[in-house]
Image (cartoon, rainbow, N blue to C red; front, side, top):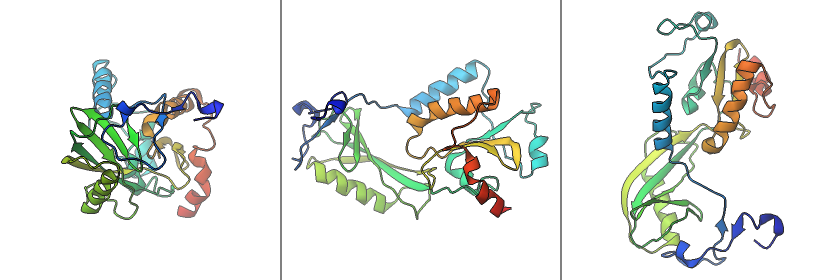
Length: 249
């Protein structure tokens, strides 16, 4: 906070930000220029917008298993020029992408009611505590690489409760317990580009825990790659795993 280059981003919080928290040995700091995207509402609004424009259709598509089937694939009379697979963690088990070094990570969160905690900013203290309004908070999250089921676990719940109780003694009630699997990658870089054995098929994946921040930038990059033949950044282009692909065939 004392260094000039960080002053625009870090400061000391006012007491109103931290009412109800236990004392911290090192105090608290405020990270500025941050935000939170309500992803369910954003997706709902986006889908409504594109559907109204007539450029989005919500239907189930089973990805073909062979290059010839991909080349001749049609859906309701439409033969796509490109097929972009954006299935997140589910793509890790696909015959097309299983050669990529996915390192999936399960994460769990709790929604709590805690009237004794008065926060109007997101707290990061070994876990995040996100205010949702009306004394309700989302807390998380866990990381598990062995259990990749999309269902909540008792061990995940205990871990989150223990971490929450380290920062506040205020009583709370658990409203809901959620879990999901992150599409993380061994080298912690997204996965973009054309399948080396089928140029019509592309992937947009591997955003891990940073999808909200990374998706706009890299979706624009992939769009330019598809429509204008502009190169992908080498750190995210799946051509970096071409040796793994060759060993897999």
